[in-house]
Image (cartoon, rainbow, N blue to C red; front, side, top):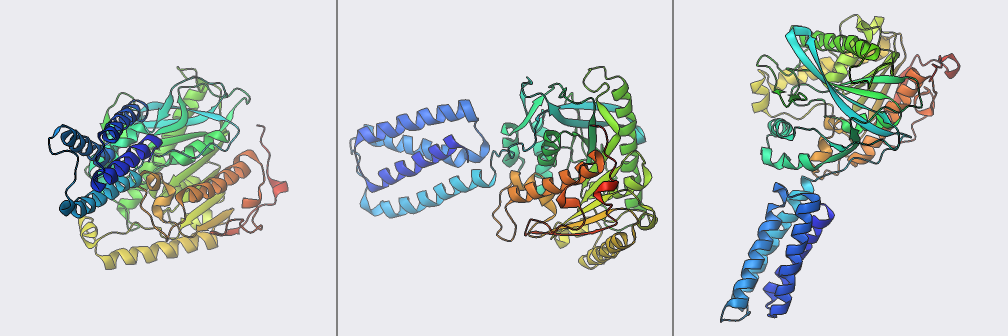
Length: 486
């Protein structure tokens, strides 16, 4: 809860205690009314009202009505003894709910930027993508410290994002109305930092159907603050909501389905996403030659391109590393092994496989049935995934890391645990988890795109994090790293 939200709830608790105790001084009631009104006005003006605070608003309205009636009534301010216990019980339950709802569904903030740069963001629509689609990409990039521009939110069009999160979680869409109030650290449309001639690029792909380009802003901001141009792709037709700059929205296509088995369907989807990545790289080359906006012209170092993906996006990273030579290194977060059979023996470029302790989202029998599966079939798929992952790690000839994060789950690689803060003692604090994820991601891309060695990815130094175990193979000595001109 934000400061004024906590203040409003505190006023409601104190006022309720005063009323139930039967302390009948009208001046105190008047003071409560004025305090609540002033705090509510300040809250509405500076923080913004939201659905999750309705129980608090309702409590304050009820208290104001009760106090006003008592002040004006001939019966005075006395609360009858016989109903105090009942009133106190009901009020306690209501106020507990009033505190819980905005705490579980907060207006959160992202971690303070840890890199040397301030950051900006902008969105491009790219027409002519594979399968007759247009794609949307959002960029986060380093800016001068004095850059101007409005502080950006998660999205400029929150309504479709609210609907997408509601559909994915099965919760009422109204619980996500507060996303419009969340602010990032990026300034919309700010210029790129001018202290470097060109900047390395890291592409990002989201998970399938239930996510889109805003899935992991915590990572996009960290990359941009460290000096990379992070470019998140909305895979139109497979994103939960591909939101275009003019407000148009494309939801998942009717034939889109969650990939489970390594089969023709998952392979076709994988190849479509790899083709999307190739298309984006082609268009970036055009924008680097001449950007009509003037933002990217000559500023992208397309000889230093990395690729980051989560969930199915991580699966695409592995295949794209094999198929697309312009990608120099990749990080796959809980990516399932939908790659081709040739990948374990032919992949030579550096790959970091970052794995949570619970890499699958728990699914009920009813959910599995909608996908045409049974729990037995799903367990069979899980076993097949594990075997293929071990084959990849054991046979790949290029540098490979397996970074295992204890006390995490599949959603830890996204912003969702910030959006819904359900206490779970089996998981580490999500902000600590995000810092660890960012530390390994930045160290990896610094090594393989910038030629800067680091202990986290040197192949022999133990992890400094108690929650992390790292295994690696074929890691070149630091002296063999080609240090690119920065």
